[in-house]
Image (tube, rainbow, N blue to C red; front, side, top):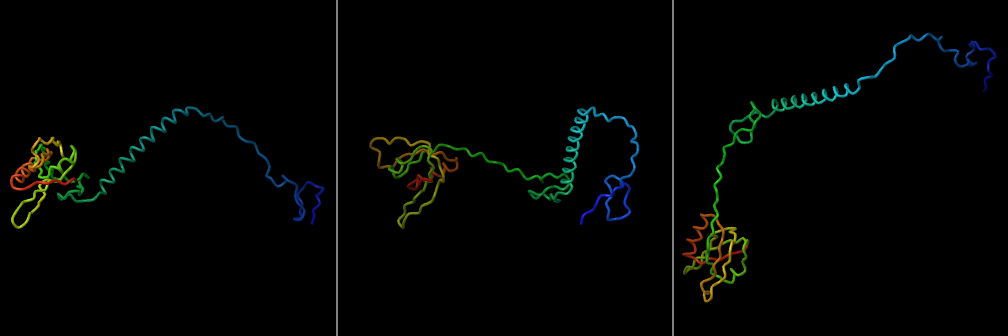
Length: 191
């Protein structure tokens, strides 16, 4: 179906005949006069925005911290790790006194001289005391993880009595080593 254009410019009463474009628009009216919009002082606004944004962030952090402290776990009856509800600080734990472990150099005669020749300064060894008895030997560890500080050269003609090694051990372990060497044969194992 094709439509033929109407010879008149007035709206057509018939819905089958289209109206020319622009005839159905409302009439024009005058636009009132207004002053032009001027954009100025943009850098001052930017500074104010940055200043207010940093203040807003600081305020938000303070409110969040206060909410976390207020909503934190309650307790603090002296139990370690429990947070005190009033302040939000961990409950005070008793302070343990740390003993000062003083290392001393302890010369120890090891029964097997060939074993001592395998040792170098800086090695870690366990010292084992083997007690001799008629029913068999009883072995016990006298020192654990002792550091070898020096392996002296053996003297000529003294190979039957074992070999000497200098160990760095705590003072209490040095006393046990001296006591064990008087009653038992000492041996070492590398850690």
